[in-house]
Image 1 (cartoon, rainbow, N blue to C red):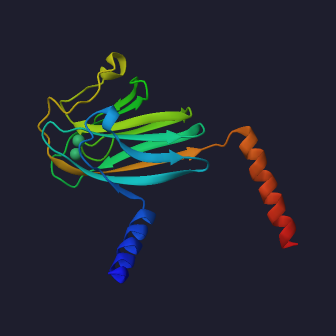
Image 2 (cartoon, helix red, strand yellow):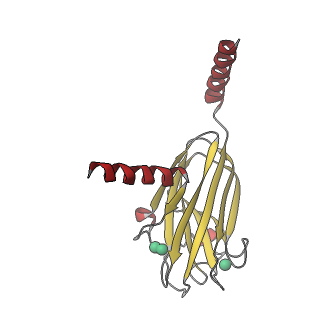
Image 3 (cartoon, helix red, strand yellow):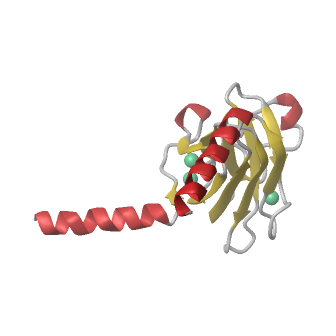
Length: 182
Ligand SMILES: [Ca+2]
Ligand SMILES: [Ca+2]
Ligand SMILES: [Ca+2]
């Protein structure tokens, strides 16, 4: 019993290192978004795997501790005709980015330069849910209005520049290491 538990936990650990997060329902609102975690300098990358069904939207929240010089959200689907849309939203519900077809095929991709520290959410839904006008109207994707069915992967990545204080600390750490090596 104990031995098999050890095997299970090792398997879980190795899948964690792969950086793949599987969506879990219900995640159809900002309040029930799946959490991708907190990202600090120098940044990081995670991949999300999930499914969009009829009237389904999937929301994921994340926090960046410092300003991200580059943030990217790239979606992929191997299902024929898959047509997704994507929004990036602040914690207050302000839609700051929308995309329909900038990725491969009809799948969305978004890149943002100089995203301020804070908590945000990324939503992926089917074509017909929300449109480009949602950046002005702040209409959130709710899954209603589309009839898409597809499996997807979203690659999420951040390049984060530490605040000046943290940068100084990193420099001091480097000095200590190089002195020890001499
Ligand atoms: Ca889903
Ligand atoms: Ca969902
Ligand atoms: Ca699309």
